[in-house]
Image (tube, rainbow, N blue to C red; front, top):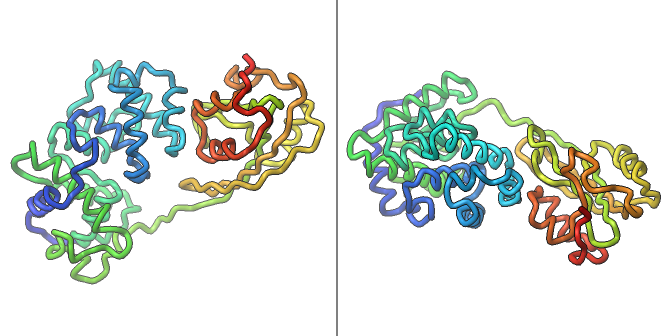
Length: 366
């Protein structure tokens, strides 16, 4: 399954110093708040996308206390468009726990960090390694790919004991000395190798500092790693939603429940699993004219493909009143107002494209 290796840490550390990514804003600090924020944002999201969000978050929430004190709606609004919104909810909960349980200071060990909301073992290892030089491994997707290839680790990672075995081997490969400098650079170096050279397809093996030691490169089959038999099961889902406007440029939106489900805690039009349910909702509010069926919006999530069917209609008079549904978290929003809300990316894009009479001039009904 694997083979013994000489020390690889020195090669990774040296390579990272010269060829790795050393210009990113979260690499210029050992502040755990900033490192933690970047690690959460970078989960399943490209660096180029994260950069602007990271800057805006620090401007609005410069420290963990500011984030903990903010309303959840403000956090979700700033996160809007970054996707995987459970990260934002956990980010907010984590900040509050750091303040309430740890006096506003992040724990200094990966073991305690991993007890906080939204911080798994790998993220905890990254924070502890970067900020406190703790000798702990990480196994994000990039690092997992690098290490399974170098080690020739061909056990199925869908099996828990094999995942644990890889963690053990990753721990054995960590630097032994000069941890203050070596641990942050080694951890970053493995991330950089996976992101730039040891890519899922067509890895640039000849440029890799671990090429001479890599079992997968020697066998000529790096794309066979990592091995995971359990595949992601995708499914399609269709939603119909009334895009109700009042003729004065306002759109009816309501906040989805904060716990569970897609887009939890974000503002959306009412969502229904059938067209009939959407029409019935509009009929109960006095919408008598047939709505305009807009083009279907296709949106890809991790586990499913969404087919969104917007139905544009005008509400008669005060047929829908602000706050009448969802415990008061619903209402009419003018353009400037809904732009400041936490909205799912496809809903925000749709609202930007739909032309409404007097849009941008209306005041929300209170």
